Image (cartoon, rainbow, N blue to C red):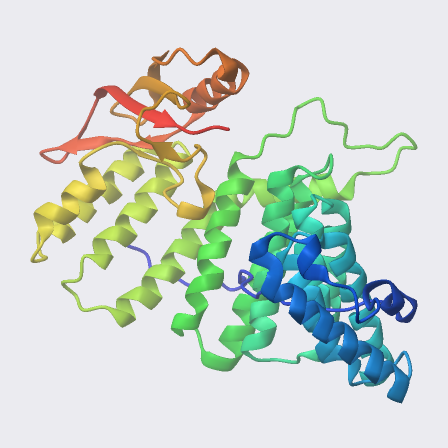
Length: 414
């Protein structure tokens, strides 16, 4: 397998959602009279948290009386109260508190202070719960802006790039805008920046490069499969060039080479970490074969799969590993976070059950619906259309790809 490394790459985004705050005037809305008995107004499961709400309300009142509406000591109580309200699904109230907490942090600690980050993340979580995705997008943009201003180099900065890249993927899946491909370009650049940050600190063989590299590979799967209609104009209504479209076409044209480079970089790092007889080497060859097959390079894909089988023969548990990789057709991309199919379930009355075949070249054929669930007709037909377009890693027997007939799978699509 080739071993050249990528010169520019990227990372993905892990980070978590915390919580907090609201504007000063809002404290009177939430911090109601101490005599209010929230326990009577809520289900039994909320009795404990109702007492906590009263306690936080008292703490907020007391702090405001001592320090005023912008007292720095308010943050802890605002955060605690916002988290409880959020856990109860009271997102409008929680969002106001999160906003107040972020505003308070900026006043007391500075415009780009890290103290506001848990409040911004808390607001994002509640906006998503309410499906206010445009607002969540704005707050993600702001969160990333603050992170890049306040964090500096190091693991937290790489994580921030990864976190923002993950949001770009989520926004892409939601189809939030007409030029959805711009999200994919942003994903690639963010993962590349995370990759470069780790390389600059830890070198080209650091295992910490693997998360951004896997994010980059996911991005290339999406870029390579994105279809722009031939009728899409390159010039706008006033004759200006659509630079974003031209830029994406360049990304699309370079996708196969970029994907190969990413896999080679992953392989180089993994080979440093694993013994020569590790089945991981075979899995890396399968990864390469999958990428080739996805891009219509059938002969090259078969070479990689056969080389993987040769590698497996050198390991102690070759038969079990080969069965897992080649014992049945596998939908591509073989990446858990990117499954193109709904979750598989055991056949039941509410599931959509389909039978289909997979050719030796990984193409789907003979799709047939087996269930009688008429309520899901529209979604079922959409799923069947999606399935017909998919590519599968074919089943292998004696080192050769073979056709598989009558696969039966049930999916929960509601």
